[in-house]
Length: 409
Picture (spheres, rainbow, N blue to C red):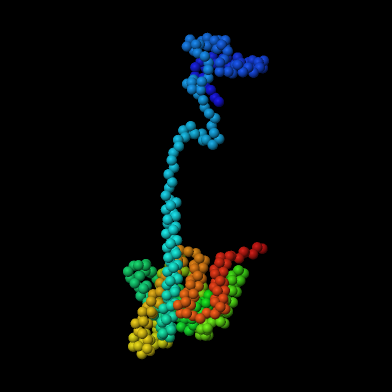
């Protein structure tokens, strides 16, 4: 403890100096340090003091104003702890706002995935019904592109989406993408018209296989051992499912395979195309342009190969329900364009790997729903082969992130 003397500090200092001079000859005397010191010492020390001080005793009361008790500061106190004032800390709502915003984004993303799967299911159901009634896959595909073109014109005309300003160089770069996009959808519809929906999508699970081959051939991207290993269950599963498929025929099989090649060629071409940064466009705009170009590419081909087959007179002569064919064709086209648009909206919010996993789950949902709706006969071996192929696709989407280590010299 520290003590401060507020009165007659000079007399006390003199007495203290005399005690220091005799420190080698005196022993420790506890009386000198008691609260009541020697009377003689007190009277000598107070000879020059006022009479009021000589009549006082010399106690050391803690509450005296002449002495102040100053406690030793705590190890955890700051230098300004004498002025410490307890204050209430208010909790900010930033954390709650961030959690609420994250929850809303999660719900939006989940809704988009749900719409993606739902539109895809209804597209395959309505499309299969139309192709089963009217065996004109080129005309059906052209009608789907025509409805998509009308929707794109509606969005651009009413400023629902920004209309792009295209140059001749951009159109020339997009044309090859539109051509393979057209062929990919045409081959898919040709396969759906020949075999069951579940079998077409089982074959289309081979897309990663062709993606690896085309990327190695044209881009020089060599696959890692993990990627090559994930292709084994894909190929084996598709082969097992094909051997036991009740609706198998070679036209449907090779059409689905051709769809895989053209769709993956589109992806490779989009990577290989050198587009300036200032001329780049988002995926939804690119898909809209490709849809319009695909319609103008396929419409004359459809008339040349199949003629004008969607007139009410021809459909009635073929014994078809005109209203039913028109409504299902329109719904199939709307669902086709809607699920493509939603797919690109999801891709803008998640990583390509997450989108690939979601696409794998979508294929499973489409296969199961089509089997249930059309009551497709599926043997245990066929189901096992399909499951192996889809598991391989899921494994491929996961191991594709693993990068090969560079070789050290």
